[in-house]
Image 1 (spheres, rainbow, N blue to C red):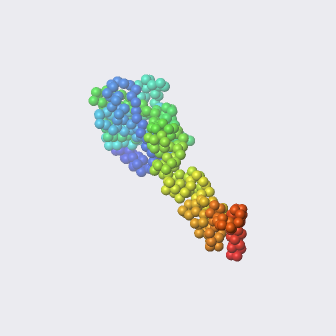
Image 2 (cartoon, one colour; image 1 turned 30 degrees about the vertical axis):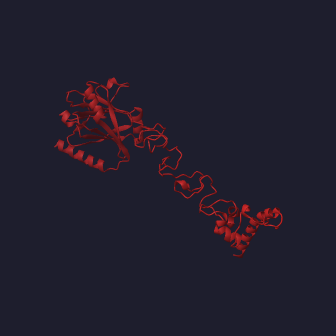
Image 3 (cartoon, rainbow, N blue to C red; image 1 turned 60 degrees about the horizontal axis):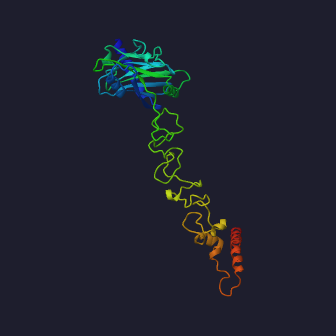
Length: 352
């Protein structure tokens, strides 16, 4: 009856845990050997044993102990040293695994080999039930311990404690082919910066990088990089080739945008080129990036010239034909043409 009751509680806890939404992604932590009883056994444990740390929500944190195999070994005891944990809320086991709270001995074997010593917090340990090795976490199996957090503590506090070493996780492993046993403690969370540009891999939730690096194999790609037209999201803003060097709100033409001069904020498709901005009819510039310049613009002809051409200064032929008079008249005409265009435009607006 007692074993059936335990099985029912385990199944209920497992269903509740699996159905609960995971707030933070699982991040695996490996283990390093501390006892070195057998180099081969130590290597097996370091290669195939690991723990996932996740946030199931509700002020809790879950530790999932895994054994990837293939070599025979069994996690027979788990221990926690301090941190922001309050107490074990539930134990969830895969088929073939059976654990109970409280370990014997109460501390991790080899605890005094560490500096500082590993001191398992009271009631923060669990052992596999007899027979110990078969009921431990063998290859292909898992064990989940769900902890409540102390009042006011968050999952981020657990992450910080694991990173600083304020919280350590120990495991005792038996069932090796050598018939020996080994103890392990979790590795500190990795902070990968593969390209060494000061920005970290977004797969890591543990690290205090300024921002995550969207491409951690290329030092020229990170949140501080300048975006250039190369088919790559250089600055990790989620948009490829969004180059707007003059900050006028239009993407450079060479990057597939509409800005024909990305070095001048006064030149873009939103600029009015015509009578309302008469200098734009005489500056030899395609101000609005439509492919037309000065007198080619319909607005420069219709609004400013009444259907006639408004000629730029260099193109004016006033006073240059034979016997037409001084070239000073040419300069005067070139100065008066824009003024006449302005007056004509204003006159048309008043008539409207």
